[in-house]
Amino acid sequence: MKLIRNARTILVIGHQNADPDAVCSAYAFSKLVKEINRKAIISFVSPDGVSKLSKQLLRTIELQVAEELDLSKTQLIVTVDTNTLQQLGKFQEPIIKSLKPLVMIDHHAPHPENTRTATLIICDEKATSTCEVILDMYRQLAIPLKREVSQALLTGIMVETGHFSIANKRTILSACTLIDRGADPATALALTKQVMDDSERIARVKSAQRMRLERIGNWLVALSDIGSYHASAARSLISLGAHVAVVAGKRNDQLTVSMRSTHEFFQQTGLHLGTDIANPLGQQLGGMGGGHPTAAGINAKGEVHDALKLASTMIREFLTGAQGRIRCPAD
Image 1 (cartoon, rainbow, N blue to C red):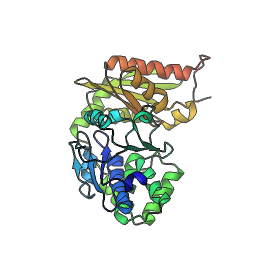
Image 2: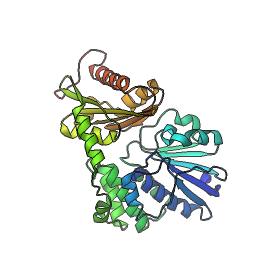
Image 3: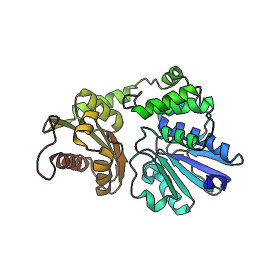
């Protein structure tokens, strides 16, 4: 509250290729700021633009997206749905060098590097989306929810939870609150319908063609490499039957790794993809990683083969444990 009240210009930033959770969070947070400091000038920027689905949403959400960074007049920087500053790509270094107050609002497992650069971290990894964290801020500050804000938050929650496929009790209660405040679930559903284009379909098929399947006890781990759509490809390998999927790709010098697992796998093994695999693996590869128990990612340097091999080794070592006994479904 103090940081917001003292700032005349606030820059809200989403991660690279900002998804609907980031965009909807940024919109709702911007409206929240205006309730606290009506004189504040707020802008939103996303390095390399926003995702295709986010562009669909922006037709109905009044949020202007800039792709270039201007810190000359910025007095406060706020990141949303961003696990590490490395996810800001080309903006990372200028932000760190600016020495401007930095607030990070997120729902991923916090990365230790954040404490070195952030003035304030508002992180709730028990939330299934950053939109839920923003909703809690409205509640705690007793700021009324307007219909358009409720609609944006419900839409962001719906997308981030895979249309409630990974929702928990808190998620459903949050959705009910937003519906009670005017959000329409049918509208949110219509806004988030996305037709898969040919390039994504081809990437998914190629990831299956190139897949190497490893069995660790009764668990199936799928490893594959593809040039783009890594997260989509990883999800598709899970839908094919793998318990864990790791998909990596490299463009120029940037290595990207996406990981997914089933809820059954997480519940029975306790392996958190974000903290147990992505975080340490990202550091080993000279970058950063993080995420959720069943969905995580890495941006780093290095080779695809090495990343997949290390990921496989780390998963195997975790499941085997110190006693060499694999944690299987029967356990």
